[in-house]
Image (cartoon, rainbow, N blue to C red; front, side, top):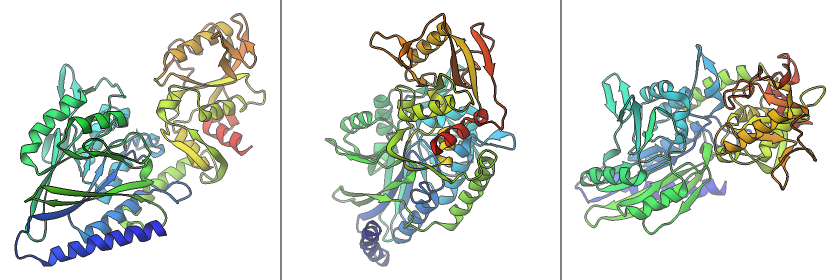
Length: 507
């Protein structure tokens, strides 16, 4: 309540200033105030943690409240919002939802501007184009191009007015009550961590340099809206002294990092917090004051009814699907005193505690447990940490694609080859999370305390996806060194990997 009271005091303070401005309509005084609400890395439209944290309807209410005080209030999304999400993996009318729920929510809540994050490209060209076309907010990016055959062009927005290219910069023009006019320029860049055949990432610094050269003559203030790693954001800040603030994403944790020039700010993922930036600019002296406040989005904030109705609609679709697997998706099944790491970078690069839990659950999902278990790190789609009370719903968020667990009898030689291949794919989705398998000091693969014998036969639990050869091309059910495959019935514990993990955590 103290945090909310502090926010209220700030709103009232700025409200008094804005109210005074609204009553003074005699002349342009050359001073103008505006507000930007910053979100980044939002995958869930509904509150998390039993309703305590996040929720886009609450963010919408915050925007409404701030806009009532100062109509020059703008809301931006610094990338990563179309994927991954549990709802997005579901099918509606025969097609995966793939971020449709997020665009509808953002349209309703009054999002103004978005940029690409690396996860936007997960959903493929066709779905991404649909989401761009459905959006009622603007997009910008200086370094992301679409590849069509040998041509590289900016992505297009195809609405009723026809195709319009997404620009490398965006200009927000505003006027206050006494007639002061202001143009704010945004430039944007995205990290190149998601290579796709339809996307070309241009070098960040030259792309932003060109965008700034184009936008500076047209605007009074220039801001960064980025989805980059922190070190890249710091480099951008130090390269371009025209940028007064860099509103970023990608790291998932809130931060405010000063540099020699602009401060780099990022909010927490899933709208657990947002940044509210209040700007005061004097056009005569060019003096700019920026007050950035990290605002918790929690159950102390009201929900905007229109956005809440959209969220409720999509949550009902999700709930019906989840109840096909578990009776109560919101049941608390585990309390994590140590956060469980479900971030992409960890899942695809190192053995994680969450990966260990998933694979141990897989091995023990059978009446006769498997000796060990493997799952591709790319199947872990949370890209976040799990801490505190964990519900069944959280496990669906971790493993949204589901599928069953198979138990195979495979030769030691094939097992070693599979493990070596997974290790060679560090940083990719084919990197393997493991249970009861490790390497000794000499680099030899072990099951438990015993070195794997190439001539031996081992019982290994795998995700059904892994046995289809998608990530590891030679690992298929018809491989001659796969000596047996047990495929569970849908009603068995191993019939759904999420059910297996939920049951394991309950125990």
